[in-house]
Length: 142
Image (cartoon, rainbow, N blue to C red; front, side, top):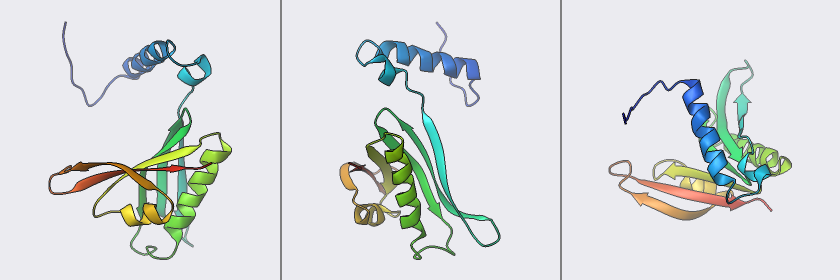
C-alpha cells in the first residue's frame, strides 16, 4: 500500500472519499441526512463602487452551518457591517433548515464580536497557532 500526500488531489479522488464516508454514515444516519449535499454560500458586503469590502464564506450540512471565515476591510470595521453579515448568514441558514452555526476564531480576532451576537464558547485550543488560542463557538438559531 502506498500513502500519498498531495496539495492537488484529483476531483475523482475527492468524490470517492465523499462517497465512502456517505456510505459509512448510512449505517448510523437516515439516508436523507447521510447523503445530504453540502451547501456552500457566501454573504458579501460591497461598497459604493461595487467592490467587496467584507464577507462571510460558509458551508452548511446536516443541521448546522459552519462559518469558515468572516473578513472586513479596515474601512468598514466598527460600522455594523459584521453584524449585518452575520445576521444575513444566520437568516439564510435558518431558512434552509440549518438550526445551528459554528465558528472558530483566534484570540486576536472576533471572539467578543461573536459572543455579542449570541455565540457561546464550547471549546478552545491553547497554543494553536503557537502563542495564541483558537476558540470554538456555537449558536442555536431556534
